[in-house]
Amino acid sequence: MTTSSPSRTSPTSCGSKDQHASVVAVDLGGTTIKAARLDRQGGVAEILRRPTPVQQGPQAVVDAVTAVARALVRPHTTAVGLCAPGLVNSTTGIVHFAANLGFRDVALAPAVQEQLTVPVTLQHDVRAACLAELRLGHGAGVDELLVVVLGTGLAAGIVTGGRIVHGAQGIAGEFGHIPVFADGEPCTCGQQGCVEAYAAAGALVRRYRAAGGVANGAEDVLARLGDHEVAQRIWAEGMNALGRALVTSTVLLDHQLIVLAGGMTGAGTHLLEPVRRTLRDGLAWRSAPRVRISPLGANAGLFGAALHALETIEPAGSTQQLPFAALPRIS
Image (cartoon, rainbow, N blue to C red):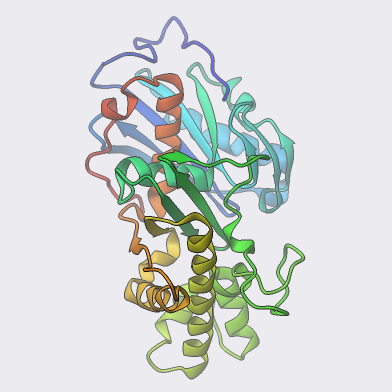
């Protein structure tokens, strides 16, 4: 985490109870930078979306994040919370590696901090989503929780004993690389048969195209489930893989609740029903944990980035000061 004291010209401090105070959240993705300014009543005051200029190099991406954050900061803003994929050190604010961003040892939070007069924090995007679910979503009050974010890839946030697990190297939650099929399809990680190679949005599209289908996104595969046998097969195989990975995770960690989050959750029952069935059938000697879809949808990372910023700079009661009560959807 990287922080500095707010400028003397700022009318509020980090601990201010000013009802006009706000926090800016920035969710850095491989294709899109999504950002919002959130007020203390939980309202979304302003939203910005910008393409991520990955092809222009890491510095261009850092500059784009900085520009978006600067555009949203106001005199009453008390913090900026960033979240990003990859190997993220939330203490130093460095992204050590993120393949889809072209990042290697990029000091993201310090670079943004240099251009602003409020504290800047950084969290892993999936752990940010997990934090949001734990504080604001179905995970509230749950001590043993798994939050699986379904997008172009797959990853998970793990909560045990009410605390988010980081792991020895800070990379706990690489759910997408649980092997589910021996000698299965190759994964980009170098392994074979990973759940991500079947159930991620990118994998669904890739496998559907390889079977002769035409799709630009996973939603196109979903739209054909009613009348196209190939789409049905590809989708079924993906959901089976996801359910199998959840069996492995459940046996290992004994989840109380599993929450599915991210863009693919718009599939609703087409996602929930086969996953619940595979999970139930794969647990011969114990009951299956509950599986629910996050109420935060694709906004979980933004809410989590904001919460992480507040809980870092205002550890006492920060969640109550900015409740996000309305849980608005950010399109």
